[in-house]
Image (cartoon, helix red, strand yellow):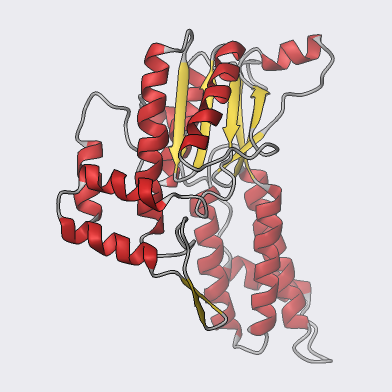
Length: 327
């Protein structure tokens, strides 16, 4: 089913490039913010997205692309199956189960027709300045050259979403000034630093380079995500407290390496170093609590950290070097 649906969407050379991973989406956003005339960013949040998908519209969208009736009937059966809560089957008239095997694909189909095709037409016919669009699943960021375009787009998108049983979150959907002139403009109006927005695990910050004072985008690990991850590491270390040190070390090594491979973007070194340090501190606390007289000295702990925890390194090049994006 994935091949039947997706192949047609990426074969048209006249449409914007389809991102296939979180890293590509982040690169696309970074490149668009730095190379296009973007002065305002609309950070979109769809309220209870997976719970609000209308089954009737979803089936129509699938039928538009998939001629095989067997696939359509299979999707209809999956939608009508409902969910199990406390051993009881509950039928749902709308939405798809979060975590379901087909939910991400069906949600992408839904937004392709509700949002992607509509915004491409809107950008050609209604926008007066430049517009960039980056979407990964239901995480959407739209950049505008003019504030008037942004406000008009937000109003029309609200109506568009309502037609398909969706709603923009009134508090989490934000329009903020962001771009090469945002810092100076806000300083002149005495409004402080430009606001930031989050996208796919990173906080995007409008800053100036120390070397030449030019505008750039700083991407840092979202603080809440970092704290939640460390809390999960703490709980798992308590569960693994009495395992042999090599087994704990191998698990922590894989965990830190995976974190670095995703969050290891340029200029995010302080957050990477902080994560490694905090993991080492939590590991030291766990080892010291294995027995009443078993406190581990820091001299030995440093050797264990050096042996098992990878050093914080930048794993991704600058997006401008890796990706030329048609937004």
